[in-house]
Length: 190
Image (cartoon, rainbow, N blue to C red; front, side, top):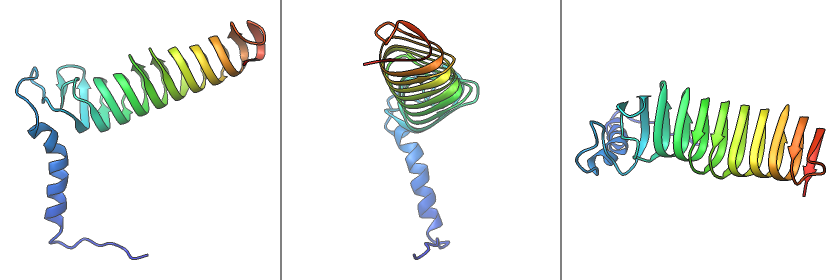
């Protein structure tokens, strides 16, 4: 396999492409935005605290990487969302933090002490407490797992589901439509 090498003459072109990738959303933006940069989208977001100290306003979707130094709020993140406290309306990709809060739907993987999805979750949650307010299609791996409706696997100390088509493995397993409504070690539903 032939190895690519950059010449010194190509470096300015690559740098210009990189600058344009980050600057294009800002150049397309409308005026206003409460002191934040308004844009139709951004490939990168850096947030120190929600609302007043982040690069782009919270309504700007992130298609790429969002880094939260302490706490970040965004309308949509497609890609990687990393920081201690992450809050988003829609998440597609990887969310890693102490707390991951999704007010709408989440697709992908959430890793943290607490992961909460208000609507539908497709993928996996891993952490201390994993909660899905709507339908879960996938797996929850944690100490406490809860999903209103679930298809897949719950593996933890306490597993709770209003209706689960799949397997629960844990100390206590609650499944209203399961083999038994409450059963130790395992429970399943079809």
